Length: 595
Image 1 (spheres, rainbow, N blue to C red):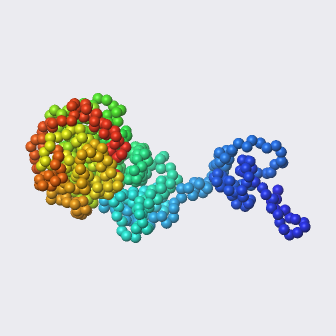
Image 2: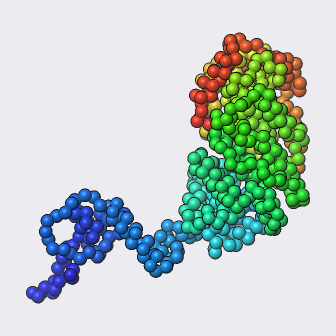
């Protein structure tokens, strides 16, 4: 039936109004001109057509809404058309949903992000090879998988809170959150384009690394459900490829197989850290050989630090994670004491590593000691009369002492490489120290360097590191105000580390040594107690740790005097109440392997 009919009386042409197919079936007024999609179809997400043959007028049918039926009918028609004509994915009308965004990445941006990765992230994530990355970049035009890997790497670098790229690389770099916004755009791009090919059925090493970068980016964005999904995706793809089998590494290029082995162990470390932080199960186990220093003679320093990190996390297997997640029983005092002893002896006094690796190792060691102590108190295995200090209520004070001593020797740049994960670990240890200070008051002694001073050092450090001041400093201050309302926190830096710690803006000023440089981390002496005048003015009611001192630190040799807690059960209950009150606010969420 023609829409335009000639009028025999003159040249004018009149239009016969007709509803589109969807509006006609829905029994609604069609708002359109017959040439463009009507407003109803546009709003409902339907394809506007005029294909139906008009029927004679008669009784009306049901007026029930049929939008879902129309959508399904159209979808089935489209799928049938594809099957009929044998169209590939790129030829179908869905191609635009997964096609690449043109001019999104410049070669200068790619090069800068790759350089930043190798200069800062590589020591703790030695899974890429610079020459191989260059080859992958060259394949971006013809390989969707290569494209997604490069875009995910750039996104991961841009979302890091401490990323610094050359001027002019990021558009509108002076605008607020320019790096972050571009990083999030690239992250969405990589995830969207990746859906256009089947990386699950036939995964490659690129697939695993891309999923790991997705995890790291979402972790930095504090999207932990999505981060966990992509971490689990990476470990699953690794298992599909057989990376948990030593035979997987018996053939192939030496450079590629060595990076695959490191990738498996990086996933191993990451999964164990995240399992503790977020109470998740494990999927990877120590089923292959560790990397060796002979893998690359030019990277013995980096490999040494990386192997130390694997060794540090190895004891946290299904037994610990099962107990931690309350999915297993059978914990004992002897087993916990042995685990604490393993952690205490896991790292040598001198670390043959880069500075950024040393930060990771020393912080992770003390954080893991704190987690084991938390498991001990949750099972009621601590005692004020324990011969082993690791099984006493005061152990977090010793941990805090060691962590503050370690961090005093690191540059700010080496610490900030690890992003928000390092701050979260410091926050976890500081919160545990706060709980212990509230439950286990010590005899007053003005001139001793003690737990209150360690807590002020945590405040100073967290307030200085990027991401800490905005997110975790307010949480820690809130916890201190709730738990220790009498404790002053004047400026967060009144207690200073002699020989290295002054005002907050002068705390860190040393540069980060280049990757590959060996530095004697871990051998610096602990901070000495400062003069009495500063303490008298700032902390008249300071706590005292009993016993003799060594290098200015009280030795943990005797049980303290508990004035406020009548029984160990009361301390356990008080600690648990405080811990529960702050669960979900950042506690138990430390991670920096990485982000």
